[in-house]
Image 1 (cartoon, rainbow, N blue to C red):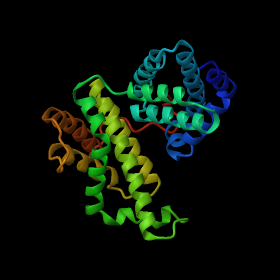
Image 2 (cartoon, rainbow, N blue to C red):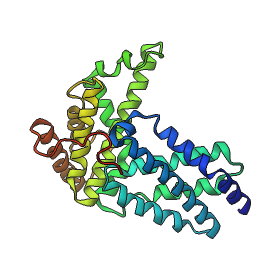
Image 3 (spheres, rainbow, N blue to C red):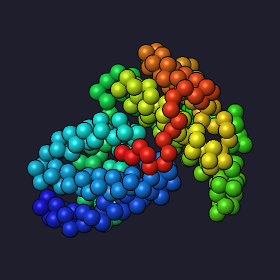
Image 4 (cartoon, rainbow, N blue to C red):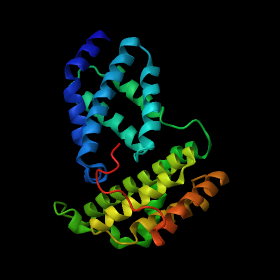
Length: 272
């Protein structure tokens, strides 16, 4: 264990840099949180490594899992989602696997930190556990009802075939659906619908700037609501979750149609 700790300490700065660089390959981050957001992300990346090393040194996973829950409560209130935090831990795990020999104990601790982001119970936790199949169901329905959205060749000039373009676009839609589901779970857990509404409004503005179809966010939210209220075969949703989720989704849909909240912040104005 001491050897792994030494390797992590020697590589800490590079591991944090690699994981944050991969994060910012997605233009979402710079547009949503601006340059100051990246500064905060780089600082947080260093903290992730530091807490990981402390957990390994003390042979105490709770050092890292308690940190993960604290970070969740902080960053969710500042415009991120639990999924974003989980992705940060996953990126760090990949960087460690590439750079550090015999990294298994560190990878296991990061997996435990990701697991700690699951809420203790209720509709929020249920929604988190349903996230992957629910996102697939949403995208299946969107692909049936809006086939042209999945053949956006101009978005993928390097892809030669229609099939590869559709696969890439489907992956993008699934990622967006997973983000909506994560923000929805966070809003339900905190009893703060505005967390989801703000993300929906910002995402709509962001996609319009990138020349996505005007109705894309609205149709995604409508489909998500439908999949929760009338689940497709193989997907079981508790009535309480369907009702609570519909209230939040309807608030977001109403704001998209008739904005009543403040407009989404300018890039960089609401940095975590």
